[in-house]
Length: 135
Image (cartoon, rainbow, N blue to C red):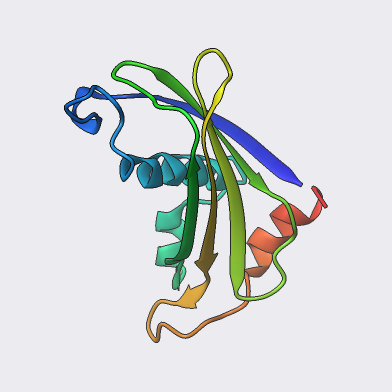
């Protein structure tokens, strides 16, 4: 299993009239976690796109457990629990507050697609190699 952790602070624009983070913003928090996970593995989405691979989200599941509010420091834990062997990768993501209480839990699935054709392709060899040592 591979796990990474990153943090972000709730901005005022991300809250609603009740001073609570609007639920749609959790997809962005999950994206922050995935982008930083890829970066820690030595990859960026830009690099992958430059190499002809795009990674659209095809599934997003979220459970909301507690609210986050303006100026909270959030910790996003991202896990890849199984080594991708084909055309998709699955991220498990949890968002915690400063008291280490879980606020939201999610699962996000992305496909690997060839940029020019949008056809599914297997995980790029170099990404698979970077992940292999964790499984």
